[in-house]
Length: 295
Image (cartoon, rainbow, N blue to C red; front, side, top):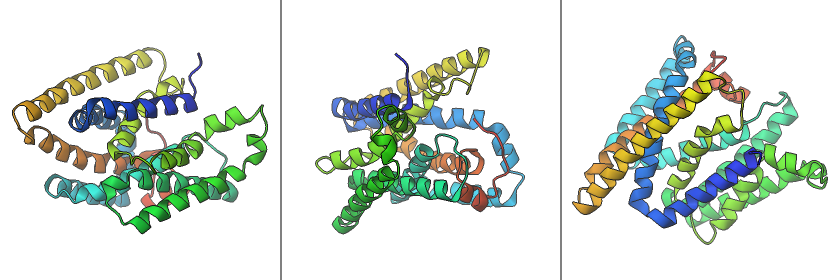
């Protein structure tokens, strides 16, 4: 069976949601850490050229310095988690919106911006238990999510009502459907933000399944082996620490790695803004992006 973006997104997200109900909060946290550290560290390894190019620019250096400072705060102050929930949500919305290459135009930029708003507001409403925002804020996010997604989909109604094009559209614009669907599901049951971050790690870790030209030949085999080894070791380590935290009542066994992970995540998201070729033009202008390629 051919794997496409819509199938991989839906299956990955469904597994992550089910996983939480099966393993519980502490083990979900361990799984996020076990896949999160490899995601960040492997991302750093494969982005060396892009980061090196970015570091030639004063703006990029300043932005990374700010991100590093926020990351250090994350190690000490738990309130910093709230800003990271928002920061990651923006990263997630941009990553899903600018997943595929498009011809730049004012109209296309406007459409993509609308999709960013739809995904971001859906995420904020779905993860409202983690943000702790007011009822009126959450209700506004739900309204924005459903309204913006409806407007976005209406712009493509010709494709939605054409049997020969609808599957292609849904595959290329997966989160235009998944985002609002997640928000509607979350009306009855809010989503832990760690589910979305685990989805992100898993989906982008499996990205070569969709983008065959991302890595090829011997590099492709090396990519899968490295991913399996790093994630396997990460999961083993943090699941053991989760058992230690529960059995011997040692919450610090996961607390300290979690705070370090939050700090690294600030840096990871920030350098993706600095080097990713998929960034929208307005982000490239803000960060003075000079890197042309990154993995």
